[in-house]
Length: 313
Image 1 (cartoon, rainbow, N blue to C red):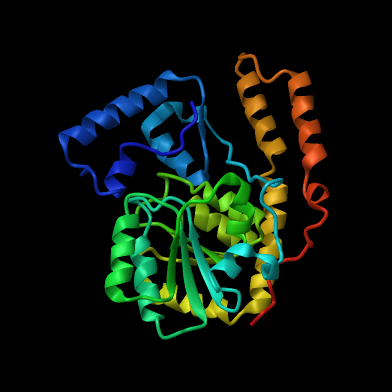
Image 2: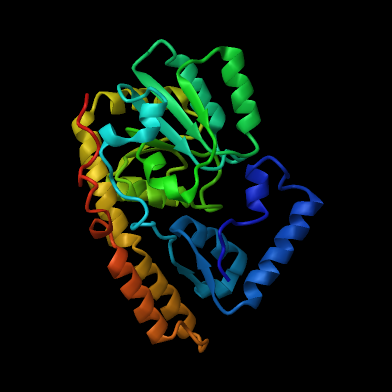
């Protein structure tokens, strides 16, 4: 079993359920029974492993951590000066903080909007919001009501433009509401790392997201709902061009070292095969490796300058 989100806790954090209700207790009982009935459970992070272990009790040895992967051949660092999205939006000369992904109930869009409101006087700082979800309508309405000119809202991009979109910023923002540690790991993090972008995360300290930020030194972590800290980090990032460049370099290196698809697929194959289940046939694995070898960045994108985040102050 592969777990992307831990339920019913995810519903509680999203504000859709309370933990002291009968519905929660029934769903939690069913989840525990399901977890204990399978041979192996794959989770995406260390915090999720702890959450699942509590449900498993004595059977906690069933869990194994296999992270998501980064699309290294699709997403890679590109010169800021060549970014078409920044050009179309008139943002080429601004410091851009980007939110890209689902605007769901567990994502702290409110915190980003409050930060943008406090920094509305800074004409050099812009917030680029890309995606859709439960909070998008609220976001659009709030931006209009507050008459914020430092926020742009863009629809999700097709996969063919993913690299251009993720490179359309100086820093990437991944804000969660409080309580998400152990519940979910943001898959967007891996492609942001692949793009060589530093990350500002609003996350619980024990979360996988926060741990990766601190271990790899690829960004900043602030407590969820601490708008003052979030504003200060935005300003620090704006004034730290050299640090951003170093973080960006380390981000791409981490993506290649830890989140390469080859490595992750082989972890899945070893886990499945280790329990007597027929894993991916070696000829198929060879085909997979060969296909990636033939398309691996930067060879497949030789015309793209191999540069890291702009050193523009």
